[in-house]
Image (cartoon, rainbow, N blue to C red; front, side, top):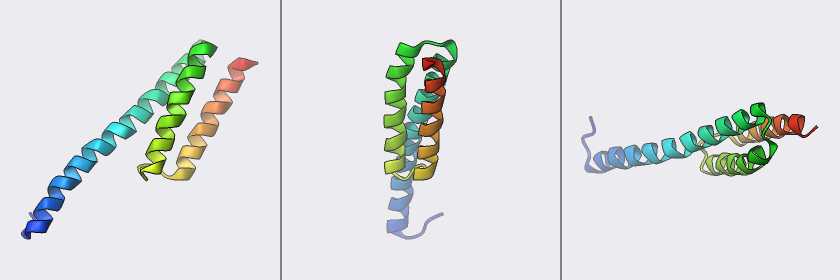
Length: 88
């Protein structure tokens, strides 16, 4: 339990930031999951659209230091590789 006034304020701001960060990470995971689902179903046109959103959300999370930049790069590479398999 915080005693100082500034520490009490930090508890509030940390909670607000935690919720905002969870939204960004959740969107990222959702886009990645939807992209993999469209790739596995073989729907190339839908996968092309979703991969852009997935890349954007991954980059946004990496920019805010919610995920490590290497983690972001690795996931983008895996998505690209998976998309290339249905392109032939």
